[in-house]
Image (cartoon, rainbow, N blue to C red; front, top):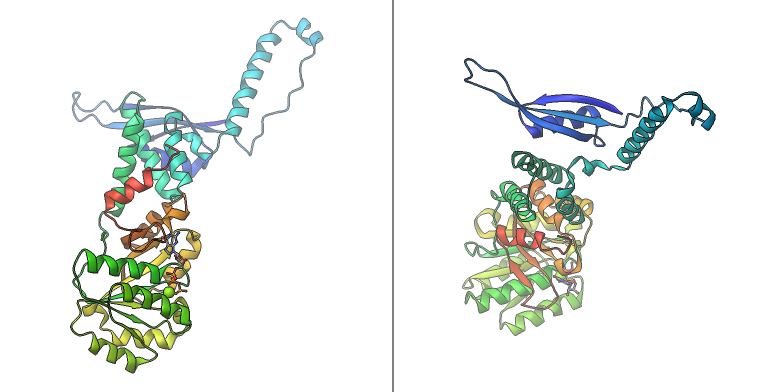
Length: 367
Ligand SMILES: Nc1nc2c(ncn2[C@@H]2O[C@H](COP(=O)(O)OP(=O)(O)OP(=O)(O)O)[C@@H](O)[C@H]2O)c(=O)[nH]1
Ligand SMILES: [Mg+2]
């Protein structure tokens, strides 16, 4: 067992030092606040002293032979030594079993477990855990589960509050909905359009560039029919220009594209040029929350030429972990327009606020 004392101004700083030197397997053995003497008892400076240890890999414990009964009889001190040896062995064993998170007290285990289950990014989990630990140390080693949740929420809030939330802003006419194949773009457009008509009394229209499949056109036509809204199918730039003219009197126009259109660079460039992206268009990137985070990152990179301000996450009903929503927002500095949680049009769509997202995130049953 390697042990070392660390001194730092704050607990997170001490933890950083310990992690750097001893690695993730380190365990905190004790911690206390120490005050420097100061001048005439004034200007005292507080720092944190932490004793950390870890089961050192470089210097394995010496292999000691079990004392035999004969030896015990021969040496009366050996009973005490044997007892000490056993204690030491137990200690080393239990440290060996401790995984990285065991550097935190047991009280925090349920919350940390929940964050892990939700697949929140490791850095975010570490920052939250450190904050909770510091709070505990300041409060005689006590922290309620409500307080843990509150502090965790506050931390995530501080990471997310600068990004835009909520659905369509309605200050742009065109809503460009991008995303890979099958994530639910067309279904989500139908949900958004229904809300625009029913709740906001907007005059809406649809443009689809998804000309690969008859079924895809029919799918959007069906929704347009239900809303008694016009739809234009565009095969080229000229069609698109004509459609935009036809829709001059409308308030909101949804543009649906097939995921695979994005493989055609020329098409995408034309589309971008035609629609005055900055002035007239609000662009959403649709991702399925059932996808692996790494795959979603590749997709986001693919769409980075587009002025995407907010994500839409679909299929939240089909997953138990939504940490990737938060991870990706933080990583790519994007907002969240909606999340969708089912196939029913128009019901299964939620225009979220930051608080609603965090409530959803902490709703899980593992807490
Ligand atoms: N469970 C669930 N299914 C959804 C949700 N949103 C969409 N879907 C389903 O996902 C499937 C694909 O939806 P589409 O809207 O056709 O997807 P798309 O992105 O337009 O697909 P392409 O046009 O082929 O690129 C459909 O079966 C939808 O009903 C959701 O929030 N939850
Ligand atoms: Mg589609």
